[in-house]
Image 1: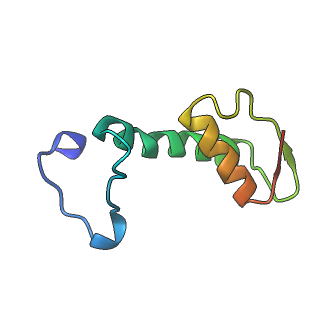
Image 2: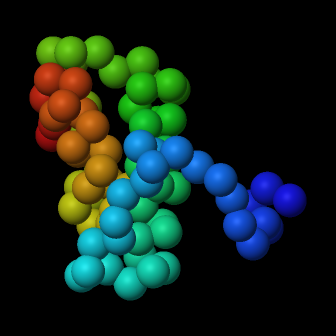
Length: 79
């Protein structure tokens, strides 16, 4: 049933506890935000180490905050 399944089997290495400060909805949205940021920077823009990247509204929402972290982890320069 995919995303509509009641139960799934997953390796314990692929899960992490939900941060206490986040609601279930907030915690569930983080992987989607991270995937969108990764797709934009890495898959579409082909961002490379040392390049400059402008992230409009950086810090305004989860996707932009994660995009900044991904770019910095790749040694890109964030504007």
